[in-house]
Image (cartoon, rainbow, N blue to C red; front, side, top):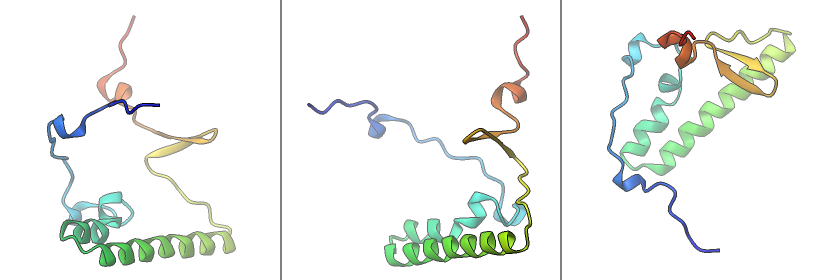
Length: 101
């Protein structure tokens, strides 16, 4: 089996993300949760990034365990479960206005 290039990421343009400032984000938003990991990756401190990732994962395990013990259901804000998948509540089609036939 030979190597086939599916997408050459080095030729793709860099598109900067549009993200709200950290201080405007909820503590459970991804950018806020992963900020220590991202920062340490940017400064190429892999050990610190790994440690930050482990701290985050342990925090999530602890919170999950506490919710289970107290029989508290996790309340989602932006996604809903659909079978084995999670679906974003405001899909792109909903946001753009579904095309009417």
